[in-house]
Each structure stands twice: as structure tokens, then as C-alpha cells.
Image (cartoon, rainbow, N blue to C red; front, top):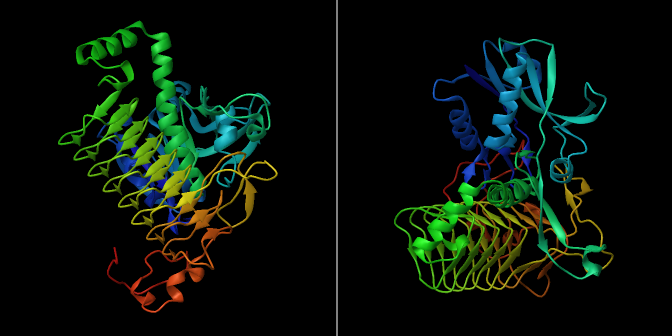
Length: 438
């Protein structure tokens, strides 16, 4: 069997990198693809070729899976698609219903690489750039509609003036997840909503439907003399970790190798990578922290995704954000997530820089790679800070009301700022090779 992929060279703002290079959860997307396809198809699958566009689909030979390399999907989605496609014995393309609540809420906003059409049964669907061919390319391709089997989970219980309607703020935890990564918002949705929230939804569903799962979790809790969601049945911890006994870790959670967690830290439904330090008093809720990150005392993450080598300094609060690799967020900074006036869905920039609604009442901000954010900054909801930007807190700029580009970086205007080098130019721009300043 073969795998082919279409190389997407578009840059994802504000990171100025193709989606395949970005970390979704704790793994770069291209590594996620390789590991996932091996898990589903086995080690005998070979790379058939790399394409530049869908016009090259004609090169596909034999049994093959083909995908665009900015398309993130989980194992449950891929297995469901491949199972139905193989059963049909026809060439198939993955799709989802336009009425699916999870996909409509998270996949459609800001996306350009999904195609709206009408399915064979007359129902509106979106086509994804994911194909299965049983015996080489053919023009006769059947759409396979995959349901998210979403599970609604509340995450805020707030006064009505914030929700604009009676009830809680909720998210849809997809049991099968897919996302076209074209914006930092998609990175956030894939890393948090379709990963951590989905994991919690799957555990809830297993407990509801499987007596064996319930008994296994209960037995682990009894043996370890812990509450069910604090025991090893719900909390996976890697090797060589140093965790203070006073830290509170609530599952479902996954913690990597060589992780240090200090006294009084709170970790609730999080995914932590390898070589991470979480100091005393930190609070992490429904967040993802990739490898080699450092959180000093009392740093707080709420539904936030950190890529590799990020420092979030003390007393800083990030809410519903996506932070690029090698970035520093200064002490006492706050990333807000709610419009105080005229409560309405927040807008964010798409791949082409156009402001569009994302359908969310609460949403944080996106910070690119190799950024330095000074202490005490306040960032408004939905804003982007481009890669390689330096923001120095001053009387002239302490509140970030608009997107910040590289040309607006403070290092251009201060003495000695030239020591901060640029590593992530925009598509079409070039820079001379230099050493990392990190």
C-alpha cells in the first residue's frame, strides 16, 4: 500500500510556516501524520510520492491513501473513513455533513481548503482533501460522510449577559475529529477542543456505556486510595517525573517524560510533553504544553496550546490562546478572551489576512514563533502577534488592540535591537542564515 500527500506551502498566520511544520498538541503535524498512518495501516505502507496540487492525483497507483498535509485528523476519524471506504470497494473522498454541529462550529470558520457541495442524497456536505483509492486513480470518486459523533460539554456557567442566551457556554467534543489547519484558530481548535475536550468526551462515553471501564477506573482508585479521576486509570504519567505530593492532577491527563511539577500546582485535563517544568502554584486547565516548556510560579493556562520551548513567566494568564515555539511571555501579562462591549462573536484573521467571524463568544490570541512579549502586557481577544515580534511594555504601548506585524516590532526602534534576529519570514521573503537568539 502507498501513501501520497499534497504539499501545502501556504503559511499559517501568525507563525509564517506551513501547517505541516506546526505543532498540534505535542507533535509536529508531519510527524503526527507519519505515526498515525503507520498505526492504522502498519509498517508496510510506502511513500508513493509528493504532489503540488490535486491535478497530480492521476499519479496515484495501487491501493493508496492521499491527503493534503495541512489536514489534521485523529485516529478515530481515519479508521472510520478507511473502514467505510474499503467496504465500498470504490475510490472515496472524506466528507462531513454541513449540519454536523462540531464540524460546522470549528472546521468551517476561516477554512478555504474544504469544498461545499451537495452529496448523493441531496444533503449539503463539505469535501475534505483526504482520499482512498483501492486500485490506482479514477475519476469516479464517492464521498464518504463521516459523523463527528459529537458530545456536548459545558466549560463555563456564567451570567446570561456573557452568553447572550440562557445556559452554559459549551463545546462539542468530537469523537472523530478533523481540521484543515489554515489559521492559529485552527491550531487552537485542534489542540484543545478536538484533543483534550474530545478525550474527556470519550472517557465520559466509555464510563456511560462500559461496565468494564467503570470497574477498571474504580479498582485503580481503590488500590491507589485516590479519587477516580486522580488515579492512574485516568492520569498517564511518563518516566523520570518529579511531582510534588501537593500537586493536584485531574484526568483525563497525559504527562510525558522528565517532567517536573511543583508544590500546589493544579493540572486538569491537560496534555504535557517531555522535559517540561511547571513550578509551584501554576494552574493549567484543559491545556496542551509541548516539549521543553517552562512555567515559573503562578503562571496560568486556560484552554491554551503552547508549542516547544515556550516560557510563560510568573503571574501571567493565557486564556484560549495558541503560542508558537521559542517564544517568551513576560510576567504579569494577560490575554483576554471576551468583548466587554457589544457581546458578539469574535473575529480573527484568515490565511489571507481578512477578518472573519469564528463563531466564538470567548477566544484568546495567537502568538507566533520566536516572540518576546514584555511584562504587564494586555492583549485583546482574537489578535495576532506575528513571528519574531518583540513587544516592550511602555506608556505608549501596553494594551494590544490590533494585530502586530514584524515591521511594528519594538526591537526596530530601540538601541541594540538588532541583536534580535528574524527566523520566520513571510512566504516569498528571504533572510540570510543566522544563529538562533534563543
